[in-house]
Each structure stands twice: as C-alpha cells, then as structure tokens.
Image 1: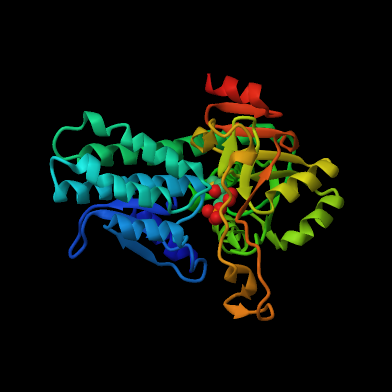
Image 2: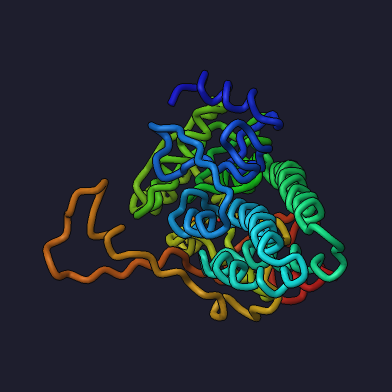
Length: 362
Ligand code: MRU
C-alpha cells in the first residue's frame, strides 16, 4: 500500500491520523456501524471491513482483524452499541436482559487485553439510566472512549518523551502504535513524539513471532512517518543489546496487575530480562484502562493460547514435521522489578510496585 493511499484514507476520515477503528454513518446499502482496517493483510493490502452485527464484530476481534489492547476496547465499546440496537429491536422493554448474551460473546472474544472488559463494563454502567432507545446514549459514550484514548496517547507521548534525555536508539516489540489504539499509539506515541523532539535517532522493530506485528505493522507505521527503522528477528535482540547501542526498550501492555507486573506480547519478558542485564531501560506505555487492580499480580492474568498452526506454519507454508505439537502463548508477564517506568495518562510510575500503582489510582 502506498503512502498516497494512506494519506487519502486519513484525509477522507474525520480525524487527522490513522485510526484502525471508526464508527461510520449509514451510506448507500450500508447500515450505520463499525469500520475496521483489516490488520491481517497489512502492509501490502489495505482493506476496510464494515460491521453492523455484533456477532460478526466479536469474530473480527477473535480473528485479529483488529488487535492491540486499546483498539480492542474501543471496538468492543462500539460493539455494545450494535448489541443494544439489536436487543432493542427485539424487545424495547427487555433489551437490558436480551443484550447480555451478545455482551458475553464480546467479552470472550479475546481473553488477555483487559481494555475489552473495561470498555464493556463502562458501557454497561449507563444501562440503568437510559430511557427509550439506548443507541444514541451508548454511541456517545463509545465515541468518548475513543476520543479519550487518542488524547491519552498524545499526553503519554509527551510524558514518555520527557524521560528520554539524549538522542538515542530504541527498540520496540510487537505493535503498540496507531493500529493498536484509537490512534497515535502508546509505545509508538512516545517514539513519535520523541523523534519529533530529536531524541530518537532510529528505532529497532522486533519482528514479533508468530503473528509478525513488528515486521508487518510497526515497521510500516514508522515508515509512514519517515522514522528510520530497522527490523530484526526476536532472537537477535539480545545480541543487539550487548553492543551497547540501544538505550531504551519501549513497549505497550495488555494488562497491568495491581503490583505493577506487566502482561504484554510474548517475548516482552525476554526483552526485559536481557535489557536489565545490559543496562538498557524499560519503559511501558499504557493508559489506565489497561490496569486490572483485581489481579494482585501477573500470575492472575489469563494468558491467551493461540492456534498451533501459527507456529507450525510460516507465511502459510507448513514448516514443522507432521505430529509435532506446538505451544503458542500469545502473551507473557514481565515482573514489575524489571520495569523502569510505566507511563500512563495520569502520570509516570517509576520502579512500579503495589504502593505506587495504588497511589496513581488514588
Ligand atoms: O495479540 P495482539 O496483537 O493484540 O497484541 C498486542 C500487544 O501485545 C500490544 O503490545 C499491546 O496490546 C499494547 S497496544 C497499545
């Protein structure tokens, strides 16, 4: 996909930045509903899918048409709007009960990113006070969730960039960019802002086996912004740290426990261990909607297991011999003591632990 196509897509939308999810008004033959950029086929194909059915939207989350914790949360919020529309059409009196089946489906669409649960709970919080058709009230709330996420990312970009002193090279894992959020990105938001401020010379993007979010999405996003980017295999990262050229590892999160343990894309823990060994600092960038204060530690966070085929095949080609099983956890937990900073829209937590996480929320 060319930069011109991206620019045209952005110009046609209501925002001045790339957004992976957007609520769109009804058009010819198109009911009002949710547009998702299909991230399964980026960067070489650019396709936008439209959803007006909550069941299909839940499947799209499971299939990773949209992915990244905040983007999943925003999509789920719009999903609640679709579910309410369907439930209200079925029964104007009983929509609050009827809707629950679809909300359970949405809730189960991916298990680890807590933003999904957070967004559904926030939307559900309005149900009791709604009179008449729930759609307008719920749509306004979903749009606020989306707008707040973008604002949080821009603010976290400033805060995180403020931690970086001199011009340096940084590494990121997975994709915590515009595509993973409402827009701008969490980790890539910090990288974007710091690059503009002349604090980042170039970025190393880890390919992020097996789904290749880094190779396909992060490298593409950074290229769109003309930020110098080099791709490396996940297993090359430790060697890179040993050469002393990387000053920061900057990543996002899917769920942060009350003690500051961070659950993020599989491989993040290995980065944190090797980064500490080589005196490279670790910055996690995540909005407060990514915290799960009910999880006392990372051990209580559910880790999604994905299909064996993601590992047994490479680019659609079978690579492993027959009958070899594969273990494919999509996330891991980095213990809080390996993290230097967690940057949130409410402020920065240095050396996270139960006390300073609690203070942030107080
Ligand atoms: O499996 P994914 O692609 O949904 O995983 C995404 C990540 O792990 C991201 O790092 C995380 O959601 C933060 S996105 C701002």
